[in-house]
Amino acid sequence: MECVFGLVGDGFALIAADTSAVHSILVHKSNEDKVMILDSHKLLGASGEGGDRVQFTEFIQKNVHLYQFRNGIPLTTAAAANFTRGELAIALRKNPNFVNILLAGYDKDIGPSLYYIDYIATLHKIEKGAFGYGSYFALSMMDRHYHSGMSLEEAIDLVDKCIMEIRSRLVVAPPNFVIKIVDKDGAREYAWRESVKDAGVAAA
Image 1 (cartoon, rainbow, N blue to C red):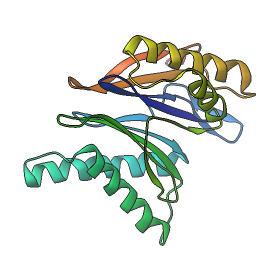
Image 2: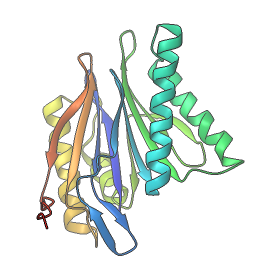
Image 3: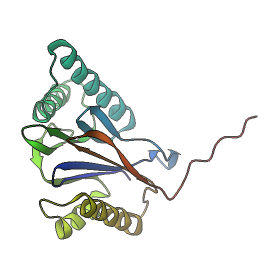
């Protein structure tokens, strides 16, 4: 029951995601970070099949780094989103990746931005968005409470409302979430919202 959601505020963008690694009826771990720091000023939140999600997001991250090494300048957020969309479109006709992506970034002359990219290579620039079963609740909360130019405090309060709604309404709700933000100072982890901690395995 995955959930990834994000929004754009006043001078920043953020992405929040559940941290459950699930297959069938099994929860393998509850601290899986699904929001990748793509480069110094970009975040990539992904949901979908575990193997596709990890392989494809790492592929995008390494190619973004490769472009910067070759050319001496980083890709803009829009360019990274279009590159990601293009790779999904190519894969769609060969070996499809079942992965949905929210890509957030901050560009010096443009400011914060957020892009929606789904597994069939649809690309949209958005102010708020979500993927997964939790999106039914996250999107309704954002429709009600989101407004452009939100402060960081207002945005985090809205994220917490979305998480509480998912936990209380979704039949198999993920217990833990990670929140990351990107602004003029770069991309970084902001906070975790945990209700379950992974227990350490005792040594034999």
